[in-house]
Length: 245
Image (cartoon, rainbow, N blue to C red; front, side, top):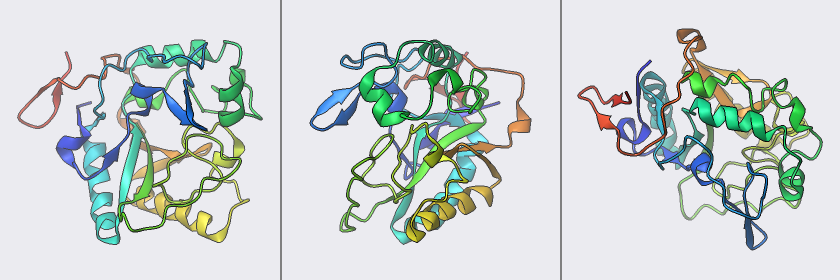
C-alpha cells in the first residue's frame, strides 16, 4: 500500500481537515465533537497536519471523477481518507464516554454510541486505517451559485458549498445518512445519486450507513492497519508516494 498527498495528484480537489480540526461552529460559538468536554478544543491523536494523506491509486481515481465535475462548476470535497490506528482506538474509547449534550443533539440524537461499531459509523477496525476508504461529497465552485440555506434541524456538520444531500451533513450518525434513506426531495435524491454513480463507476463501493463513505478495492489490503501520523512534511519520493517509515 502506497500513500501520497491528495494535492500532489490533483490540487483541484477540495479538502477540509475535519479530523485535524475537531472544532466546529454552531450558532456563533464553537464545540468539539470527539472529546469529553465539548467546550474545549481537543486534538484527535494521530492528526498533526492539515494535508490529506490518501492511497495513491485511490487518489488517481478521484482525479478522474474530478475531470468530469470541474467543467460543470463542481468539485469533489474530501473530509477524510487515511486515518491512523491511534485515532481509531481513540474513537473507540470516546464511544464509551458519557454523551456531551450538543454533540448528541447535532450528530446522533437517535443513536447510542455503544452501537457505533455495529452500525459501521466508527468501526474498531476501520477501512480508513487500512488505506481503502475516503469520505467525500460534491461542492459548488461557482461563487455566483446561490448557497443553500441551512436546514433548521440539520444533523452533522454544515457545509454551505455542498450539494444538498438532505437535512444531513458529514458525521451525522443517523439513519438519514443511510443510502436507503428515502425521505428526501427529488433534488436531494438526485444529488446523492450523482455522487454514488460517479464513485461506483470509478470502482468504489458504498458503505450502506454513510452516503459520504466509499471503499476503493478493499480486497487489496485486509491485514495491515497503519498507524503513522498524519503530517504535512513527509518526504515525497520520485513516484509521488510518501516515505512514512
